[in-house]
Image 1 (cartoon, rainbow, N blue to C red):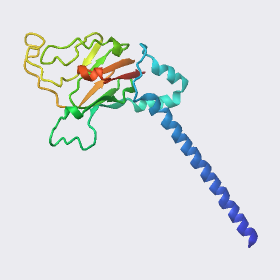
Image 2 (cartoon, one colour; image 1 turned 30 degrees about the vertical axis):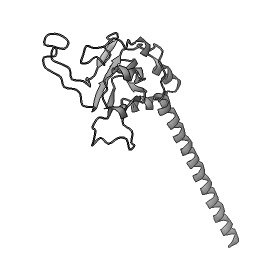
Image 3 (cartoon, rainbow, N blue to C red; image 1 turned 30 degrees about the horizontal axis):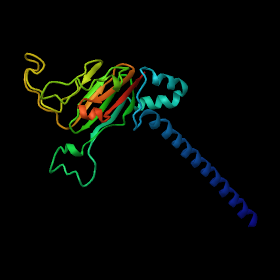
Image 4 (cartoon, rainbow, N blue to C red; image 1 turned 60 degrees about the horizontal axis):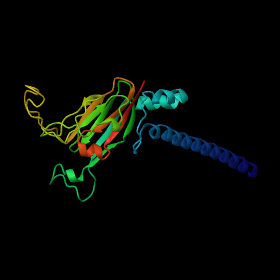
Length: 226
């Protein structure tokens, strides 16, 4: 009876040891995946990019398995473009667009996607998305180049501009010239999604063209890798 009991105890101890080892390995692998994917693809602080269009491929050659998984995950990405805080100062049933409580930020302000993928910009507030070509930096934007009234709060620097989103202010008929646009374009709703695709590899600057917002640091980057 004593030998049988000791044998059973040894079996239980061995099984427990294997389970603990497997559990520890699983936790270690999960922590490694968490560090390698989100931490390397998006950040919350501004990191102005050097004018190169190959930050992704260099990393892919270094760690192909991890980065392949990351690239596939970010074939489509979501970015918050402005936000409202959840506190007692915001009641949008009383004031639908309380501009004085809107956060002027692009979060995350750096995202990596696969070439041909898209970014869904969730816009909260009176903002305008403008995308500039590979290599353009915030210091290259002239914030004093503005549209004419009543859009004179919007930056109109065409150098390297490859996408301009909806205007937060109504665009008058014939604003850009005779019959352009042919009719008034109403102001874009402050709560909307603009899906923008990126067909070429590069590092693209995204800004809010509302002059005051851009000067407050409302910009970020979309890094497009093969």
